[in-house]
Length: 420
Image (cartoon, rainbow, N blue to C red; front, side):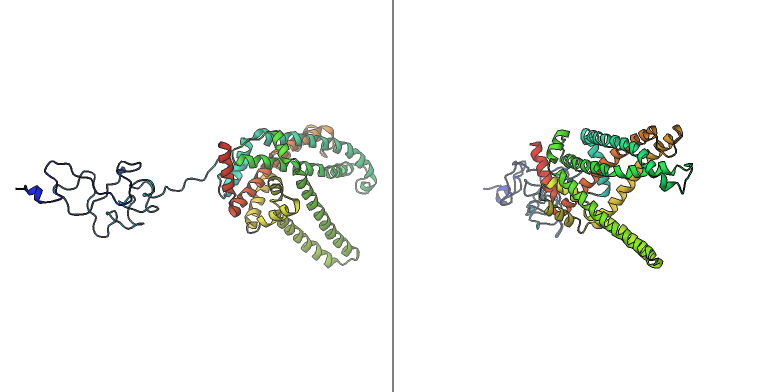
């Protein structure tokens, strides 16, 4: 004769342990890696009638019809970790073995260096420029100070020497305006002309520096630090492409400005004054707009030439195409950076020039002492502005390529290889 418990199949005897809920087909065995109750979530409810004494400890209450979380729940619905939930649904950390719970939330953007490897915002570009200096100050500041000091010292010596020569040559020109020299027109014009004659050397130096600094910034993005020798070695051969491009742009501007000035002069010679006014105003406005347009469209050419290592013509054309669709954003950042650069330059230069005028009683800034003080201020200002501008241009190039070409994936791979 059987006991009542034996007559009721599937019902446990009093005091007997309650069997675990059945394992869904295809699921790993209990106790396997990742299996088991998750803190904060109840275990799934087994199907069938409620056993006497209730469900075992840890088992959830039966859900109402249509309520999420039941055994056999449809994939993609309900709370995370449902028993038998399909992979790819629900929140991370769900119940079940790896592959049955939901995937983890996407991690934060990888940042092995000075900026995160994803499209950058304005604040991240500006902050990255300062971080580039802190990441490699020996190259960013040391190399810049070295080159700028040599160039400015040579320029100052040439300016001081040429000022006297040019002032004597301009004596006849200024005699009608300032016959007794009380206004200092001769010395002032000589100083201005001497500075204009030496400006191309400074432009050449800053162009070369920009190319060298771009290499350092590009390595800082993936967490690498390069020495001065490595920067020079990596930039060898490519830097002259940047110089050649800058000279080409300069020649174009000289031709355009000369044509504009010639047109105005020709109309003035014929005394067509209304045409002079129209051409002067409309042409001047067109020159300004064309200057901004050409500057932005060619803004990414130096970093492209330095970092891609391709042929000159195709690389310039590719950099031109990269700015397509990003013109207004690049223009806004370019204008903001130039405003910052001018504020930095004037904050350093104006107090130095004022002090030199007062201390050396030289309002025209033509004495050797005045030129020396002005040169020191120029070295400091040029160092800060060149470093900042070069870093911003390099980061804008990287940002545009991450937006359009997925460069962040390649940079992440390069960072992983570096760590490995």
